[in-house]
Every structure is written in structure tokens, then in C-alpha cells.
Length: 538
Image (tube, rainbow, N blue to C red; front, top):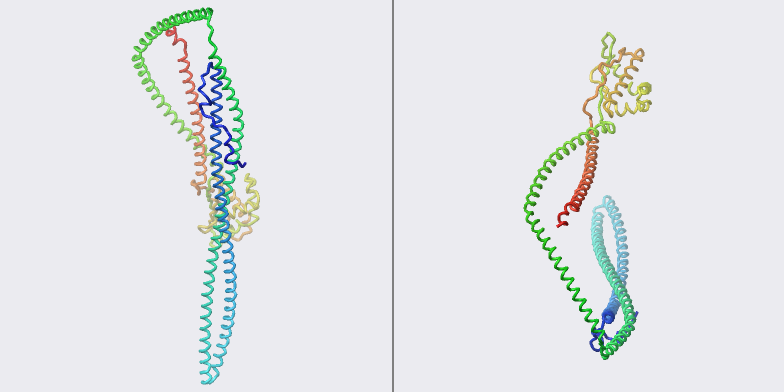
């Protein structure tokens, strides 16, 4: 919205004192009306001043925006000229670089052809020199020197071409710098455009505010005229009231004397009330003096009671601390035991079981060949599919369903069973597994299957020895890893944290309940009517 600078000159100027002589209200209604009129005038004056300041600010912003637009237009023209000059310069440089590149490529191709031709001529010259006479050799030497000079000349031309290429690279770098400068100039131009748009938006906002204030000023002008007319009418009424004399008659004086007598009686009644209140206040002051005289004794008694309560609280605190410590130790111990039991079930440790198989000659000594044959048979037996099938049947009969198939037994033999021979006629089987008891039972069933299968095939073997298990399978007490310990510690830590959080929650709730109970007890004791009976009677 565009407005001229003098659009507000026709508005009336209103002072805080109003127009005309000072107005003296005759009653409260006239005073309130006068105050309302003054408030309306003050609001109108404030709105008018705000409108003038906004109008001046709008004019200054419009001038600043116009200057910014002119400056931006000048910068745009300068940037456009610089951009056109840079683009023309870049185009000329590009054409020049392309021409130089083509010239350099042509020179390099000619140099390569000349070098190849010189190489061929050199080879031909050397071949001819070997077959020619001394005179021909001299001529060839002269020709070779000329060829060498020509090669040197070509090399000089090649180095000149390389220098020319370096110069082209420098020109390209300069062109890139010019391109970057052009990009920076475009960025500055964009920022100036954004600033101009921001100023235009601000100018539009100020125009809206100016229109609102002008509208408000137009609404206040009729109100001001109405208020002025009301002031004039009130002044006229006041002047008429001043000109008319007050008519006083005998009834008026009688009523006045009656009112004065009533005022005197009210004053006497008030004096009597004050005297009674003073006497009651004196009695209260005597009671207060008595209470103050007993205050020191009450303070000493209170101090003794507080000390006794502190001693009692300290003794109770010691007992509670001991109980909390014992309970905490017991809870941690229980959590540790429970965590260890759960860890044994959830993540059993890895143990190594061991059993020894021996060859028995049934009353005779086996020779070395028989012992070697016995060892070879048993080593091959561990990978025999028929043995694995028989072992799976034994596992199934003993309730080990995970190893109830030949494929499961084959995987067990491949991954977890290790066999070696420490002495002739002895084979030691080692089984690595999860859980101490389960590993031991698995190795016992496996070793029994080996002995049973080998003894069943004894008649078909040439070694003549049977297989016995002198000592049952045994497992080391210490596991080969600490997985179970880690699981137990983790469970114990989590359990301890949860127990601590639960204990803190319960303690906070109990403390809040205790605090509320003590507060309610104190309030009830203070509000007890029996404690205020003596004071009320006094």
C-alpha cells in the first residue's frame, strides 16, 4: 500500500490536557467520563505517534530499498559485463589452446615419423657399412653424422613441443581461475538478490502496518469528536449548576442536625468497642508474657528431646545399616548361585574327555606286526560307515537322539574326536564337547561301540587281538574355555542391577509414605483443639 508523506497531515493534534480551560468534575460519574475521554485521547495520541514513526520508518526503508535496487542494478550490469568479457576471453583462450593442441599433435606425429625413418636409415646404413669399402664407410660415417645432427634437431623440436605443452597447461590453469572468479561473482550476485527480496518483504510488511494504523486513526477521529462534544456539554451543565444558587430551607438544617447527632452516637459506640478491645488485648498480652517466660524451659526440653531422638536414630541407623548389608550380601550370594546354575544349563563349558583302548591277546603276547595291524584296523574303523551306523544305533538306544543317525556320528568323528597312539597296542580317544557329564557319557558310548564292533569282527582279522577298555572314560575338572564363567558373571551383574533398582524404588516409596505420614501427624497435632483450649478460655 503506497501512501504519500503528507497523508496524515489532516489528522488533529491532541494534547494530554485537552482543549479549553481545565475541567473540574462535579460528581464521580463526570470524573469517570472525563477519565475515559482522556484515555481515548491518550490512546489516539499514542496511535498517531506510532503511525508517524512507522510512516517515517517506511519512507527511510523505501529510500534504502531504492538505493539498494540501484546499487544492485549497477552491480548486475558490472557482473554481466565482466561475465561477457570472461566468456569471450575463455572462448578465445579455448580456441587458441585447441589450435596449439592440434599443432602440437601434428608436430609430434611428424617427429615420430622422422624418428622411425631415421631409425630405418640408421639400420640400413649400418648394414651397408659392414659390406662397403673404406671410402663408402667414410661416406656412411658422414651421412650418419648428418643423421645424428638431424636427430638432435628433432629432439630439440620435441623439447620445444613439451615446453609448449607446459605453457598450454598454465593457460588452462589461468582459465580455471577465471571460471572460479566468475562463479564467485555469480554467488555474490545471488546474495544481493536475496537481500533485495528481504528488503521488499520488509517494505510490504511496513506498508501493511501503516494501513492498519491509518485505519485505526480513522476510527479514532469520530471518537475524538464525540468526546469533545461530550466535554462541551458537561462544561455547559457545570456552568449552569454554578449559576443556580443552592436553596436551603428549615428541613435541610433539621436533617443536617439529625445526621450530626447520628454521627456522634456512632463515634461513642466505636469508642466503647475500642475500650473493650484494649482490655481484651491487655489480657492477651499477660498470657503472652507468661508463655514467653516459659519459652526458655520449653527450648531446653526441646533440645533434650532432640538429642534423645538423635541417639535413638543413630542406634536405629546402625541396626538398619547392618541389616541392609547382610541382606545385600545374601541377595548377591543368591544371585551368584542362581547365575552359576543357569549358566551351566544355558551355556555349558567345553570339556575334554579321554579313554584308552588296549589290545588283548587272550593269554598270549602279540608281536609287533599284530599290534601294528590292530592299530591300523582301529584307526580305519573310526571312519568306517558301517561302524558309524552301529554307533548311531547304540546312541539312539541310550537316549542320545542328536547322535542317532550315521551322519551325526560322522560329523562327531570328524569335528570333535581325536585319536592317537602313544604306545604299541594302545589307542587314546579324546572327545571335546559341551558339558562335563554329557561329554563323558558320549565318549563312553563311543568307546563301547568301538570295542564291541572290533571284537565282533575279531575272527575276520589277521591280528588275532581283542579290544578292551581298562579304565572308563574320564573328564578333566577344568574346562578348556571360560564361556560359562562369563555367562554367570553377566547374569549376576544384570540381576544385581535389577535388584538394586527395585530396592531403590521401594525405598523411595516407603520414604515418601513416611514423610507424608509424619507431616500429617504434625498438622493433626497442631490443629488439635485440646491444645488451644486454655488460650480460648483466657
